[in-house]
Image (cartoon, rainbow, N blue to C red; front, side, top):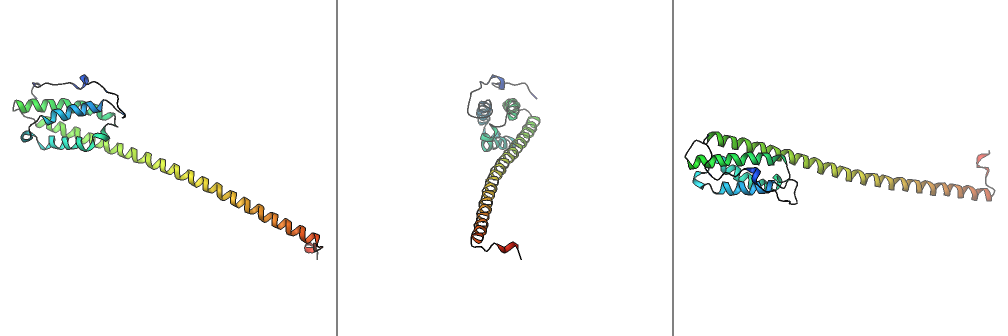
Length: 174
């Protein structure tokens, strides 16, 4: 790898803005990455660079919610700076492009595990809501059964009292 020649901006120099997301430092890193990647001439963009640009565009919103991606973006920013330097100096970028591909795969894995976690949380919330509905319905059913049992007991009691008044209370005697 050649030493950086371009305007390398370290990820640590990026100011953190407070936004309504889980990891606010990701947005400025993504913005800087997009800016740096867009300065690479389309004819000099490799498949790895194009894939990473598309990856960012497709997943930017999701990426903001996963703090661990921030570290990967810092590393990607350094790799992109090296790639740009090697493009300018017409150096070999194989190692840097390989590293960019590996970092992209790592972030894809993080997004997929984040999606699984979110899916599990949504399923757990739905199960909880369903359990509450079932519990309420069971309570209503128990109340209906209790009310029906009370009505039946009252009917039996009233019938017994009616029979007793009429003198037909010999149902227990032969």
